[in-house]
Length: 216
Ligand code: AP5
Ligand code: ZN
Image (tube, rainbow, N blue to C red):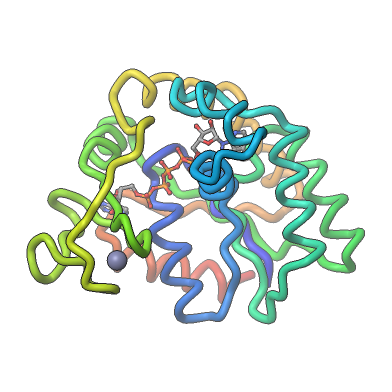
């Protein structure tokens, strides 16, 4: 099954994708994670996008479509793909349809996670991840079982993203409403959109996603 998790920054796309990967053997394709990996390994492309990302603006369609193309052509995904943070523009949505078709696959459903702006600010400013394994946490909503120790790998080092501050969040939200929210109508018109309440607790949101997947 191939799905898109669609929602503003902090909606919980990455949190839910990680659970789907564990339980359903799906492969998460997060363009944000791919771009951050390119930055930390210091590739030419990584250096080129660093400032754009820190300001909260969108990277060019050409770059992110190239990243997804590469993954679709090489990654093995028996359980299917979860597109997380991609597509983000109408051009990216068109390209995804064409890319899936070219590898003999299709999109099963698009899950829109709806969360209001106020909650997004506290989710983003409270977010941190394990510096070693990347597991995601939050200052109040998702603490490790033992304070200061990663549940998954036992590391005691954590980090915060450079774009997780109120200024770049404002730009990220504007980009979402201007460039990405038109995808809601785009997928609705194709009969592929399901909308869930992303404001509920993490487990409840997971239940809604499980429900949406069984309807797909
Ligand atoms: P990207 O990495 O995609 O960031 P984003 O869309 O801003 O999404 P986030 O990762 O911030 O949020 P999320 O929805 O995954 O939330 P999470 O689960 O972590 O993109 C970063 C940048 O890269 C972009 O700004 C752009 O520059 C560039 N880029 C990437 N893709 C691009 C593309 N396709 N085109 C162009 N440019 C692109 O949750 C957030 C926090 O809330 C966590 O701490 C979590 O623990 C907590 N939380 C989650 N769910 C709940 C809940 N239900 N209740 C309470 N807390 C919760
Ligand atoms: Zn860890």
